[in-house]
Structures are given as C-alpha cells and as structure tokens.
Length: 197
Image 1 (cartoon, rainbow, N blue to C red):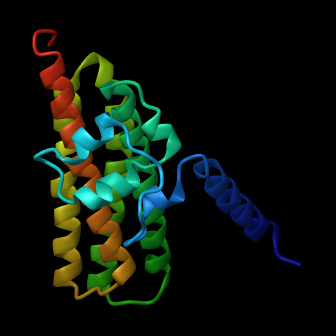
Image 2 (image 1 turned 120 degrees about the vertical axis):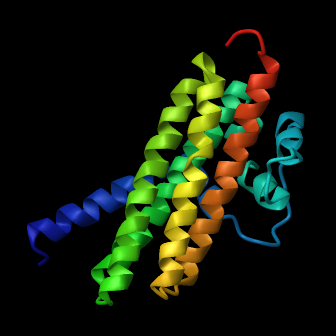
Image 3 (image 1 turned 180 degrees about the vertical axis):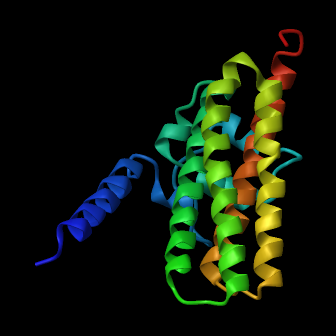
C-alpha cells in the first residue's frame, strides 16, 4: 500500500485535473489539424484575426469551447481567456516541476528554476488580469504584456543550459499564444471604453 503522502499527492493531482475539466483540456494544449465543429461567435473570430494574435489557428481552436462561444461581450471573453491562460500555465508549470525532479546539470537546474518562477508569475498575472478587466483594462493590458518577457527569459535560460524538451518548448509556445490573446482582448477593451480610464 502507498504511503499516506503519496495518496495525498495523487488525490491533489486528481482534484486539480478534475477542477480543470470544466475548462476544455484541448484549450490547454490544442491538437493540430482538428477541424472546428462548433460555430464560432463573431467576437471570437474578430479576436483571433486581431493584429496581436501570433497564431490564428491556435486562437480559434483554443476558443472553440461552448463556454467561450457563449461569451456575450468582450469582458466575458477576456475573463475566459485569462482562465485558459492560467490553466495552461499551471499545466506547463507541472511539467517543469516534474523535470526538476530528474537528475541534471547545475545549469539545467538553474534554468528550470528560472522557468518555474516565470510560470508562477504568469499564473498570478493571468489571475490578476481577470479581476482588472472591468475596472482598468489599461493596467490589465500591461499586466498581460509583461508575461512575455518572463517567458522569453525562461527560454533563453533553457537554450543556454542546453535543456531540450519538446513538452517544455510546446508549453512555452502555447503560453506566448495565450499572452498574445490576452493582449489583443485587453487592447480591444481599451478601445471600447476610451474615456473611462
């Protein structure tokens, strides 16, 4: 029988995965070459065709969940994007934490720890931006934009330490896509309400 600590750990992971199941797991890491079976809202299509969007196909796939399509306005859509970004960051953070447990060089451990801090920051930022969307889209725009340099620094550290992991590279790329989506939606909110801030 497994020690109590392992059972608690397994229970925490199960509950974490279960709590994220209300958000589409395909939105955390969308599969490529999958056709969109749900008609998208005009709000989603406009967002995914925005100037800041780095990957339109990723955006459309990530935002093809019924919850997102049902979003009635830009603020609701922004809140859902931030939740998806935070969920993605949490999933990638878990991969980094698993990678740290494996033996490696001091340089790779330093790089991985740098990335863990970057992802903790990303999670907090996405969560904070959700609450700022209504009150101050300009601050929300800034707060989502500054996630990008943190992830870029993480990537630089991984390259310098010669850490190679397709899962980590994919997670870093996806978080950048969510940052671009967050930046686009907060920019849109600023334009919709120019005199309020």
